Picture 1 (cartoon, rainbow, N blue to C red):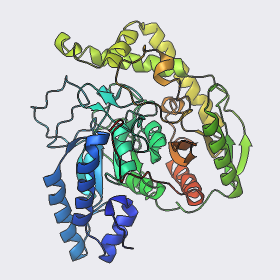
Picture 2 (picture 1 turned 90 degrees about the vertical axis):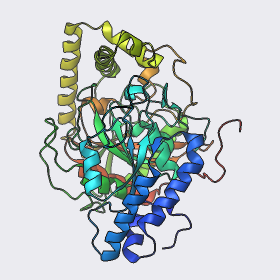
Picture 3 (picture 1 turned 180 degrees about the vertical axis):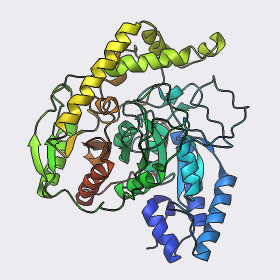
Picture 4 (picture 1 turned 45 degrees about the horizontal axis):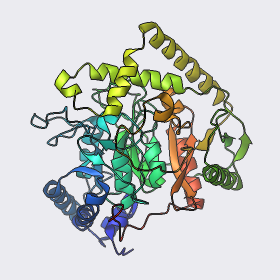
Length: 474
């Protein structure tokens, strides 16, 4: 294999090239950095690019490959880190003017540490809305991130920088976080694979101020890359007291086993989503037929719960209010107006109301544990709409509906903590990606990946053309 541009290669493709000697980590890293330099002024996917450190790490990786001694599963693969995740030596600014960059940055989060141990080449930090507070990526500190398929459109959020980076070939793997859909929304908008593992599968430190809805997961160019990334990310770290017991699993094992005989619940609306874009609905219905053609037993059925938007946004607004109270008045004055509005909504919640939300969440989790005893997978659209217009903060009043009403398929599974993945399943007539979501029983991340890989084999991921990418109006 001799690709014309190493920046277009998946992690698996790069590793095969390193193994065969047809390309080196230094060549791949230079190709990716060159593309970042060319496209990031348009996309604003990266907030920090570490050219010298990345090339130095690539050189060390190259020497290991030349000796036939790669140090880990991602040795020499360029990877980016969302700017909510601690990375030793680099500021973690969280999209916020309230963070002082001039402080010691001497701690790696668990996922960052595992990536280093696996030999990944860390490229830099990717953009997030302030504190990861919403499903689009604009922030007072780093500006407006754009979608490589159409730069007038949003890449989604809050891992919008990560999604835009992978879609545009600015590194084949990007680490994101998902508190209400923040990996899956942007992956769907940008035509990537985006995985939200079971809660606790990937250790986190420090834990999110938004609580136990927050997961860490990868954006990738392929399901095979997502399985590779999860194998690395899921290694144990004692700093996370909520982490699952390590299972020592290689998620590539069984990945090609297909979906024949699996029981699939297909729910096009979850029983309550009233406004699904017709092209999204049609593409996802066709995608389910592909799973059925591969031998899955598909039944159209809703899981039988009411829209948990009020639960999600109530808990989220309470987290925003908690975080708001760590800031001084001067810091509060320079925050994103959307984050400030969330905090004000959170201030109104009483302790009793919060406890009732938690009880409702528990009932939903129990309901879904029982529902998934009947099915191996639940399949839905990933997001109800294609990517919308990229817009600055504060463009509309903050309400539960404006915040998340357009993504009714993502947030329920943060509440239930189930593994969920989005895979591209087509394009709209105006060329915007559509995502299909596959949700598994709690703890069965491997089954979700296996089914996603089966679908991907029948519907390969398409990439946007970035040759002449320009900002709107340029």
